[in-house]
Image (cartoon, rainbow, N blue to C red; front, top):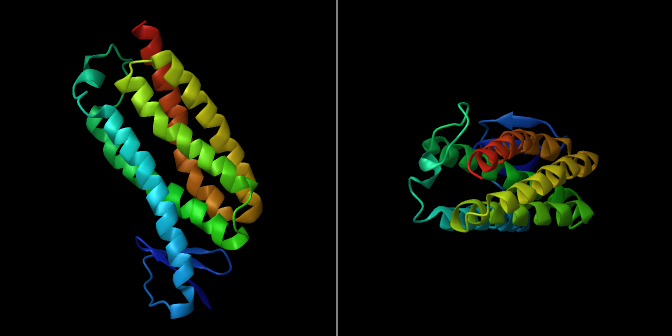
Length: 182
């Protein structure tokens, strides 16, 4: 039996198996879970919005920085973060619907806050060293979150792995940009 879960084409079966591209209509009694999904989506969107406001008016600043040769073009960040924020939201929701609010979701909330403030630190305030400390703490908390989520929902943990990989790359990029522009 399906556990009532479709969001952006991802279905989650009660047994924990992810099946992409399925569709189904949801019974009325599953609506509260959708409210939870909307809540986690709103939290991820809020983090994205804070980040977006942090780069508002800084167009060209990234391109003007001395960067390592392996730095990606500025246009790549938007699409990557859009996918990652969707994964982050679904990941938190999967744990919440299985276990309710737990210590793992408190870590989730803190790492999402660190995520949200990185862009205003790096771009808005130009505090690249402080942004490096923030993103290093974020990287640690994502790893902790993956370990904690794994105990409650393996799909939730796996959904955070691309986020952790991207933040690993972003941490190295932040460190390089900070070093090259000090």
